[in-house]
Length: 386
Image (cartoon, rainbow, N blue to C red):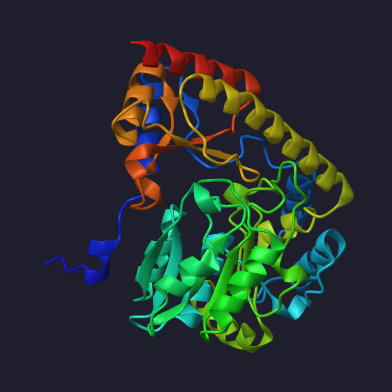
């Protein structure tokens, strides 16, 4: 008899993957699909990163690394924080992980007892609440809206906090909204959380993909937070599955024990490739790509506004537009299905991102070139006219 853990009843599918599946089906049938649904940069991995991996693999010695990652990579990440953000982050506090998801798993595993509550902004990245549930915690939604740029405030935290609350998870830049928290706002949230003996986890996975405002890190002014980052987004290494986390010193040994058992070690080829991510030539490539993303945002945002999509806040980071479609359709899910079937444009309905008015919102990723974005807007226009 099949026996499945009770927690699985609370784990929902990632609905965007259903859209992606349908997109592939239509493409296999000969349809031209414009992908605006998945949060993955369309650029190839930067050549210096690929070349570093090739050099390492050519030697043939592909063995385990320490569970916390290559010392050289932890040191390179530490220098990056100092050079880019003026943050003094010792390599000993840096944990290299199998993607940012691996970092979040480690953080929640070391911090969460059964029944502990975590406060999560809604809308927010869907996997966070399911990871909380996987470690027998309780994900408690903080409904946020345009009045706070879809970011939580100390007032939100104070109102939701209970004796069971363990901490708060925030993201800057955020998925799906692309909004940012300022340094002062993060400090205010940390003060609110720490006054209640809680923990703040800051997701900086989209750090570096900022437009019109300089990228920053919570670590520039705070030490007593967990900060999660990734090589996937700004560094363009999605398929390499490599991320990292910075933690307070007191947690390093406990996380190391978990990492040894969960993962043994992160991918060795990916770590050697990532050593090239911080080289000046690589960073030049990445900055050029960041400017390309900015141009894409600036092309798509006004085009969609002309079609009746509403944007209460303009994104300043990541590569998403979180559009209010209530003036165009009764349901973002039905609109997403219509757009992919009739226009060949794949988008993500708000259902993935929480229970806070998901039927009113559609996430649109500008992860394809400007010409295709303009074409997507024209295809959408034709569907909306019918």
